[in-house]
Length: 151
Image (cartoon, rainbow, N blue to C red):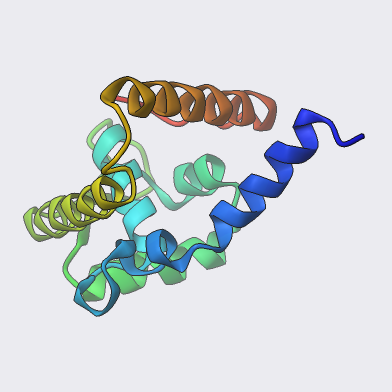
């Protein structure tokens, strides 16, 4: 007999394979942001300016990976380097107006895609699904020791 946790594992595996939502913001060729840039911009927007070290701690990624990601975001005009507003030594990355605009556009496209997927769902089912996803994510974050800021 297969338990409920096995079902969660299987469905999570299937969810992660859906390129419809995972690649280019669920918007195919119209998308501007790569998934890593979308997540990076989302974190900086919620938390405020962050250094490479802070980003490394937040994402559990090594500095070289984040240097590549932030360099690409800088070249695209999505983030800029600034002096630490708190007076620290490390320079920080701040989302630019263009980065905020592109992030908003990308997020709106993803929401439209999700609306299409759940078009036949009652609002209370969508709210319950969101609550379970939040609970699932916050428990993962708790175990990993890397909480994600939420609005």
